[in-house]
Image (cartoon, rainbow, N blue to C red; front, side, top):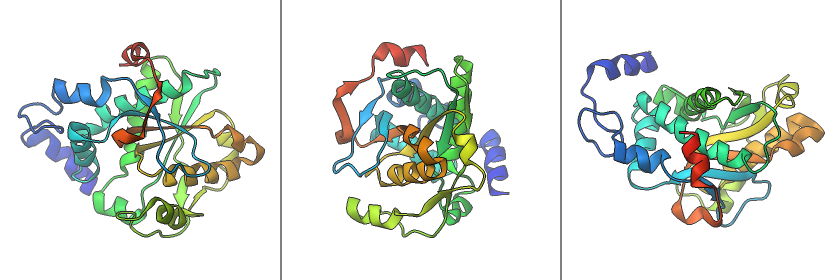
Length: 248
């Protein structure tokens, strides 16, 4: 009901930009440019957790980008899913562009905790992944969302935890729904999330998917996020601006 009410209220309440608050627009041109107008790049948290796939991000987690992510995630501004999905699609493209193998993409979103989904009324990463898959298909890339990851045990709130504490908190916390292993070997898995901080969550997701796929788990080598801390961006591994523009 909460998600339904948010969908309806978005049609009747005054519209303001999710990034800067400017009236009469869901996302102004300037904030959109900050979110998906740049060149996605590889990101590396420091320290980098063992098992972390190669991760690409569309934008730095600051300013308007941070505001849009929080509006979608915490305030239920569901209209932001489409521009966030557009940004995520660009990050996915930056990753697979280095090694296109022709297989369909399976976007595997990192799940939120059940209590967080209940409190927010939606699963942000899954909603953004669906928008990204639609964007990719519109540009001719076969992509689908495979929401097969689930939490097998409760974890503590990650806020305020160090990188090492987050890794310990998440170790063994995720698994794959029974019977999903074969599905995951039918395409190229790309783990997706809205935000990278320490990388512990994506590393745990990669472990869980790899365990479900057996030997095929070595294929879990790609991940993409909408945003990451600016200091995590690897200046030595930029994705070409031309690539990103062709996908917008």
